Image (cartoon, rainbow, N blue to C red; front, side, top):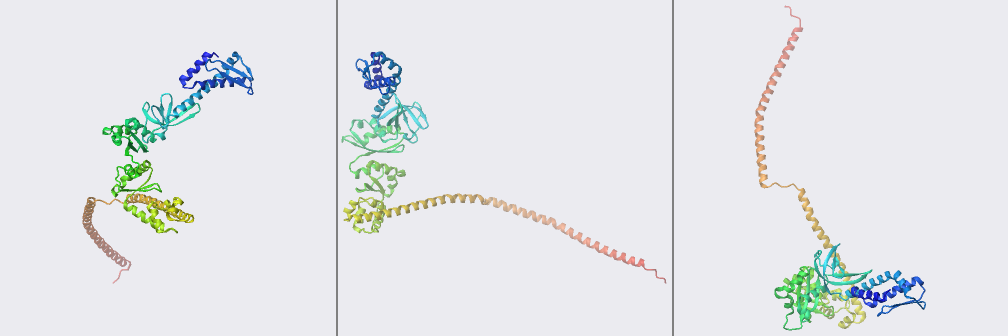
Length: 485
């Protein structure tokens, strides 16, 4: 094998495939050693070395050097496929290393095709996949469409590299803000927290290191042009920009905007924040299907519960009465627990034993007894709640079935005539009655005639009887002998 040609091949692979020259040299050495071992036996001791400068190869088999002709023949016969395989593996490892350093970075690509919901995207040197699960709900992609996404996962797959993209991760919003808002890229404005539900809503908490720069206004832009570009890229996803504050008492009301908050009560031991709002702001603070309060909780890192002042008073009274029903609980400890935000048996069952011992001056046995009782009560409450949900579901089902049955019954009942139809029917009946009366009048003369006929028949019968009587008397007379005078 010509040393100069070998050096040219190594340099070409280094430039085209972005593979380190040392990796190529080691692959060739390993390939030649494997080929020689096949020829001289697997138990042979074989050492192959290539001079990195001159490209001259040296091979030693069982302590004896091989001549160049033998080395060349071995390389030509058996080393080619091994070298190709090693180079492919090196190329794959190079791509894995390259793209692994770009995880969570945003890339621009062109959609090649859509297969079974997954979108294949060309990133220039290679093809990546955007799975259906990593696409924004409701959006569709078409061939030759330009798309922006973040690299979510990189892993070797055989001799190839699988790069998975994502458009649902919160980091995509961060990268879009950095690209669209120069103040963020320069470090004047920082993104302190971010919470996202892809395709629906995102909350971004920002702050400014320069008092002269309004962090919220800079993100929105003139007439909202900056935020509009981001919203368009995210298929119309709603974005709330929140002013960051290290004090939860200020941050939580900001995170719940546009709802107005009356008071924030922090329960440090539970990591819970009870937020009191007016009655007319309750649904706005909770949001559609709890979305607003859920995102605010993620953004602030507090478990936020929204309620009105009346609801809080009811929960406090219920919790105090419930705690007092536990054996070993006194009024002072129950009051302190409620003040710390423990409003249910579940809360009491997860309390740290040391904290409860310190709070109520109890022994370890007393604390264990209280916690056991609270766990039992919590289980009973869960069972009762489950049973109530089951009953409610049955009631809802019955309510849904009853209107259907009523509709079916209505379909079986005859349709009542309208007033006009009823009036027409009555007129028809009256006319029929009149016709019936006329028919009766017409029948009367016939009846009279029938009566006359009956009378005539009776007279005829009488005459016939008289005739018979006359005939009989004549017959009698005819049978007697004549009287001789």
